[in-house]
Image 1 (tube, rainbow, N blue to C red):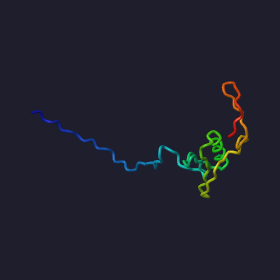
Image 2 (tube, rainbow, N blue to C red; image 1 turned 90 degrees about the vertical axis):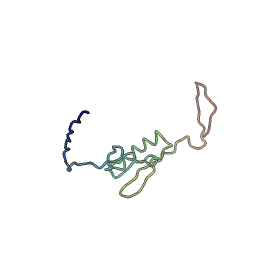
Image 3 (cartoon, rainbow, N blue to C red; image 1 turned 45 degrees about the vertical axis):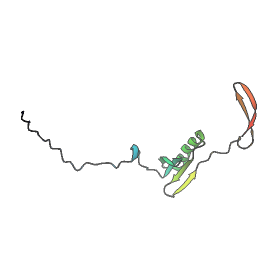
Length: 109
């Protein structure tokens, strides 16, 4: 029978003074601004000014009108919904539609 070789243990350094940052889910930056932009009740970004949050929220709302977009003020604990201005085609206004180069009869919404 072959004798086993003696194993050696390598000691690990005991550095207890390591600084660990508090983990924020999915590598997100901590909220530093007073105003939070929320899309469908999910916070997307924080802003220092209300105007910047509304500007970006309006851009999202105009691209995706079905989404619920709001600006939340952390200090005042108030939420402001962002709505698009009423368009001309809302209501029963006829809409001209052209499909494949042929005009279809006026439709109403």
